[in-house]
Amino acid sequence: MEDAAMIELAVRLLAELPTLLNPGEVAAAAEELSALIQRGRGGEPVDEEFLGFLSRHPSLRGRAAELADSESSRGVQPPPGPGRAPMPPRYVCPQDGYEWFHLDLAKPVPTCPNDGAPLVRDESGTSA
Image (cartoon, rainbow, N blue to C red; front, side):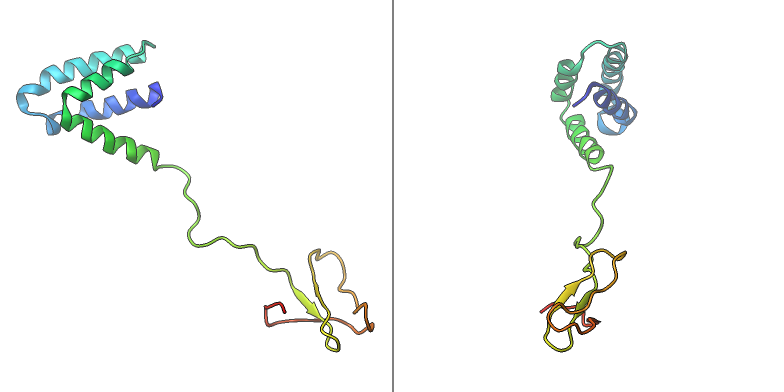
């Protein structure tokens, strides 16, 4: 976990201390956590001490895991549903079954190379 994310997590835990700890533990835990936050914001590495703090308070450790999971799931989500490329228009020769896909819409639809018949658009949406 990056230092900035750890400090943000510690700040969020500090706000929730009264609901996570027994009333007699809150003041000492708040003082220790506040000192860790302040030192961390000052650039001092406090990750080992923060993990030690969490190991001494199982309810905080559980809540920290929940908050860290919710943080990692934020952000860009994949679009719903399966992704698939659109099929290009399909043209067929009505006389011999030759098929041609119109990949470049700037180019005109050609005639059948076998018999010269004009190709017609296949509206069924399936290829042979």
